[in-house]
Image (cartoon, rainbow, N blue to C red; front, top):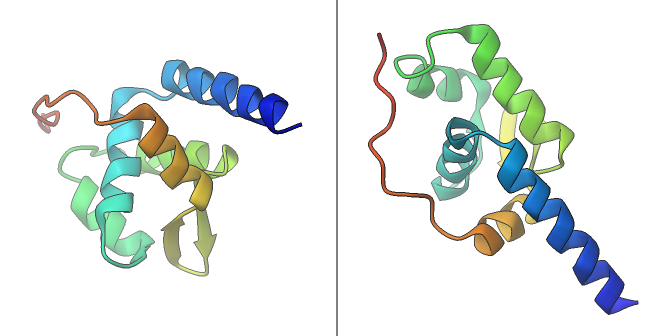
Length: 102
């Protein structure tokens, strides 16, 4: 049973590596690096210069939530245990500079 569960996580995490674009993975890493959960407003303030579209920022959060990598507690955004496990499984992202706002 444990081997099947591990295999299922392996394939799900491989899918996430393929599905989640680098920017979305960077957002997940940023959220996980914070010492405490952050608010949606603070998220918007931080990422607005790099992701000017409010709709795109909402989509990123929605994708992360739909895969149970984050969850919302009121206005707070928290990285789920699954999200932290995925980050650990995936390892560090390439050390590329973040995208610049136009």
